[in-house]
Image 1 (cartoon, helix red, strand yellow):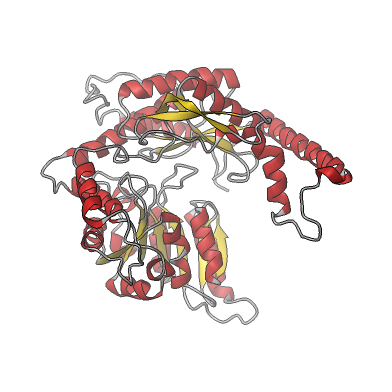
Image 2: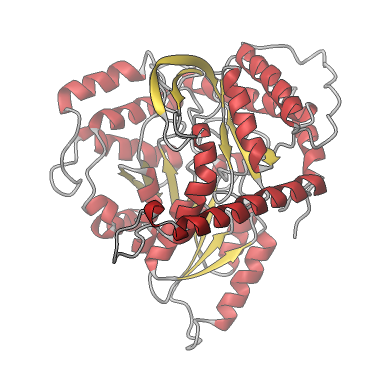
Length: 513
């Protein structure tokens, strides 16, 4: 799907990048003529790649105060951001001793477990005392503890798969599993907006790679049918296996995967399906079981389920879930299991405790209440952003809300002005996004109160007017229904339906290519 980008925004964005590249190359030309400015060692080729080095020096340094902001607190609804100052035109940033208290709209702390929790934190502390800070070993040597095995058992039960295994790093869960699943003679068909970890894993596998249009099952079927008919390059032999790779929620788009249609295609052509639920597990569905639950798909229809613990569970690492045969195979072939240091037991216990809360094993309904609060926060906030006239991507219930900015100069202005008003946001531009599609990525948490979100809206409205981000007509205010009364600081279930309608108005501005 593509956006109808405003012509003025597209024109000024291209002009801005054009000036940056033009004057950057002019400065580099003069730099090459002055020997005292040359930084590379004589006789050595440049260690950094040309474009990345050029982009870093001529663009990134100008805006680097908008990224890598250090914090001095837990990633709760409000965080302490450490102040920084530059004395060399933003080439380097020096930390100061002072901090500023900011509303956190950038962390993936969807359910609020990243902050101290009365149930999870004491158990993680006890695990730290019992097992220490690290296993100092891989899982296959001396790195498997009781809590590792218990987490894998609980995770498989929670997802609805026969077996599961955990990794110490979310990125590595993808990048080191895909090469173990497919290789030369196999084919990966990947969504065009898949995460970098999936791309890295696909490239490392040595398999053939084909890409289909983002979240368009019709194009997926076309690409898959053509690939099967043509076979392998040169030899035209049949592919050994075909693996479709998609995400549950796309982290830069906030869109939910059209999983039912993809499952039908996978069945029709006898392909395998790999589903990355990094942003959807623990965040989507009434019980937090992810995109399968929210779309009504049986987990048995997805061959490989992947997810991470860095978002909804407030920890680190990731998991792979599937058949017992698949997990047994990966334990003997995946480098992430064989050679990487096992996840710290305290981090494992944090995940296990959060998972037990979602399952209700603590004897309370706190887990379900957090999920309901997250849904209410997401749908209310998305609707309010759209009514301000901001162009917001994504689907209802998604905690990821990209606000389109387009212009590179506006990226920096938006980030800095929000920080001045004590709101911490994440902005993303080229090359992480296409040249024209710079954006701010808002992440909502169950830890946010209605007062927090109202303050955020006030600041975003003010900054959007200042920077010029209201590209679409504001949506009309919601009509208050007699059944839509506040419940625990959030709107009742009668409200999200109206938000779905409002979201449909915005979706109508897009077209499928």
